[in-house]
Length: 200
Image 1 (cartoon, one colour):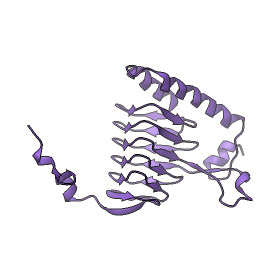
Image 2 (cartoon, helix red, strand yellow):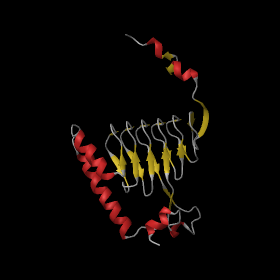
Image 3 (tube, helix red, strand yellow):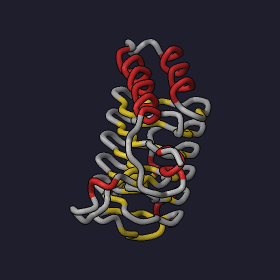
Image 4 (spheres, one colour):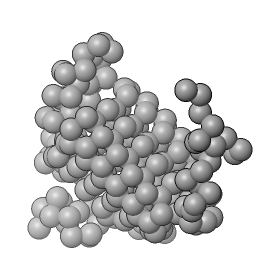
């Protein structure tokens, strides 16, 4: 079994020539993406389609971007990622439609055994899924194997170690559900600021 096959089946794996070649290709694409001038929007969009496995329409990623492999990434229509998005995408990261990702967010599919005697035995990778309409706040970290349900909000600075259901607000380290998104959220956009009190 190749190292890529081990990784895809959830076994421990190690870097080999195939993995290093995938990473080298991704680094080359990322370097081009990050070095383009701000006005080169069409060139940046074309590079994303070349880098990633699946890319939706009206996608916006603010450089700088970091990614490990690229080809296992899937990003849906209308998703926006702010600066310094880090993708440890040795295995699948699936990001849905209309997802908002704050600055300095890390999505990490890969980890290492906890016991020091086994830490050099290899690494493991499990997919991350971010469903439609999720908002991930600044400086959050999403760890291997996590799914975040549609419409949910992950507070800034959270460490997401377990699945988060749909339609909730969750935050903390480790990230925990605080409450469901409710009717109050339909009326107020920030503290005492109401949607129906906007200027004409």
